[in-house]
Length: 126
Image (cartoon, rainbow, N blue to C red; front, top):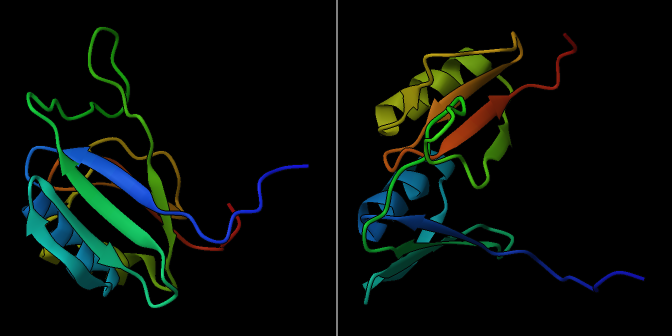
C-alpha cells in the first residue's frame, strides 16, 4: 500500500548548520527560510521541499569512497544538471570540492563543506 507522502524533507547532520545551509542555499538557489537557531537551519525549494541542517556534537564527516574502519556515508544526494562542467565549476565556487575518486563520465562526485558526498549527474548514457 505505501505511505501517502506529499513531499519529503531531508535533514543533514553537520558541525555547522549555518554554513552548510548557506552553501546549499547558494548551490541550489533555494531560499533560506529557517535562519540559524538552536543548532538548526533550513532552506526551502520553490516547490516546498525542505533541506534542514542540524548540528551534532562530535560530528565526524564521512569518508568517500568508503574505507574500512572510517565513518561511511549515510546518504548522498544526486542533482541532475544540463551541463556537467558548468555545474562542477559552480559547485566549487560555492565551496564544494571534487572528490579525488571519480567513477563515471556522466557524473561527478563532489564533497560539500561538511564532508558529505553529492553527485552532479547528466541524463547522458555511458
